[in-house]
Image (tube, rainbow, N blue to C red; front, side, top):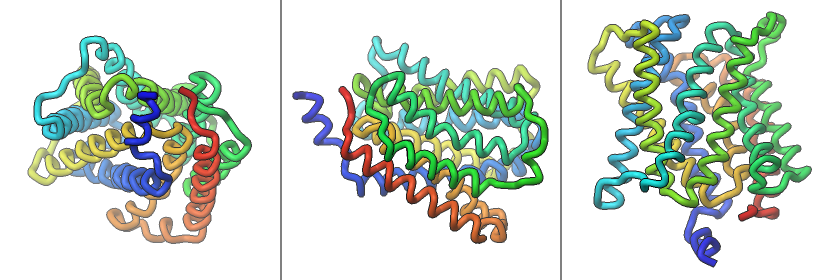
Length: 318
């Protein structure tokens, strides 16, 4: 009875979920071009994985501090996980931040950007499979399967480049990218489970802070360094920290009150938003506003609609 009452107080309306999830996607989409701009401002080379990991670590450390500060302001007092919740914090930290980004950056050095983007897009499909078949949080339906296929088709279409698909795949390239996608998918299912026992903003804030510190240490030990520190570069780093803090915290709240499939399906919009915002910020209009991107948007939108219809009718297992 208590869980049902809590669910009614949460954000469960389809229109509400769609609006808030799209805010997350726009924020994450803006991270694609802003990370590139950040690399330029800090003079981080495209093949310098150590400095990229250090950059990401500083971003997530800031994200953690921002999330903890916002949660404390909302509560009117300093917040911290319960003593029994620290295991959940460090498990989330491992999957959502450390494993995901370490494998992503190490893999990206040996994989094509196109295939990396497509493989990363598979995390939505993986999260729904984990929620349905491993954690038994909801049921798989034909509509959800069709929605995932349509959404993933949109991701493939928006990233498609036949010229880069013929290159040989490497286990320490595309293989690592896939492990990063699995790690992120696992974190989505875990936040759904853990948020029933702990405030999702508290979980997000402390796991970001812990994960950021670990990545900072890894980046420094690998020889990473940031140059050309200026007010502009620091402002960009602060914005990227805000993106992670706001988007992941809101995403965690949505996952707390809704089926995993209903929320994570919007993740297929991330690369589409990334392409569109790259057009505005990096001048890549030719790629963003072509027929291929419009078709990808149509596929993703159809997948979201079908999956949300299925998730709303099937509900969640407690």
